[in-house]
Image (cartoon, rainbow, N blue to C red; front, top):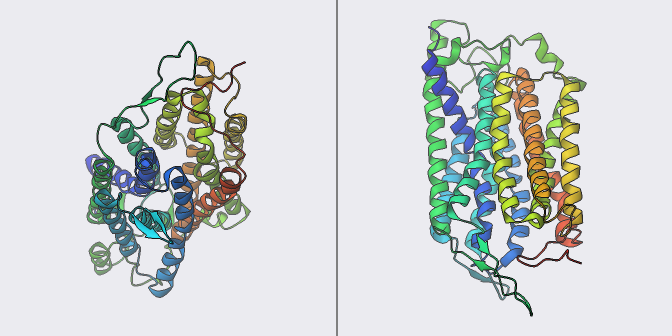
Length: 447
């Protein structure tokens, strides 16, 4: 088969990025829309703690995927991926008209529609890491970096939508000469939460369509150089014409002349991934995801809001933009040294420690009320998330050489790390209240 044209390769990278975009768009969108929905839902500002628990319970999706692999071995990833995509599209589409609906539970009103649909979306998003990543074992390693670029967009695009919506805009009244200041003036959003959820639904439909496009393009990728990734390509492997036709007809199926779950002619380097090096790589992956998906998001508002809402919004948006930029960097310069990745992780932890210190000292951290404080907190968030995003992409690229099982292990490490990080932060944030928030338009750090 002739090598794919440059245009075909660019199209495939774009489809892989759009495919990755659908992994966490739904849950990320719900998080950034919380400032809008909490004003109308009976749980109020306790709603984030409910959502944290639902996302943690969403890891039950891992068990569902495990059962699928046991009951249908060798069936490929097509069906579970399509199920995950269908759940996210349907869930966000139902949120648009139903998110306001409440129902009495034990004598109190609760936003049952919002909570049930959020749990359904959490199940789907948690399952995406252990279904989407193994699918990429059928593609050469460069496409894995495009996938993580798309995952970065799953956080960035909802933030951009929220900024366009005008979430959190307020104006502080002039300071009175005597007496207490009046309440902050909140500006209404430019469009309602239902429109926001419809926009998320459109993004998820685009992601699902991109996956269908990949299924059509997959057979043509058989001649793309893999850079020695061996087990990373299972499509169009050398064989008889009948076998090639059968693979093109069903590109996600294991070839018939090979047992399910096996890989063709592994690269010798792939076997090194089944040693202590593999454990270190998976440990790095779990640790970075525990910090970026569990620990640091729990304290972002405490570390940023003392410096103002502008600092908070810049940290959220520019921090989300750092993820795809790190993926672009990994495409051109990939660190394959375990020591180098460990050093980068330590650098990210230093930035994370600074941000954690700011959160502990909230609402009066150092340099509060100064431009230097705003610059430092925003820059720390951008560099911290950028470094950790690069480490995640680099580690996943190295694990790609181990084939489908290695990428499945990577997906499990991502989910386990994220779960442990979220569970670890629940007691200090929601039970012991270690972190303290300030009040809008009120100076709590004056003399």
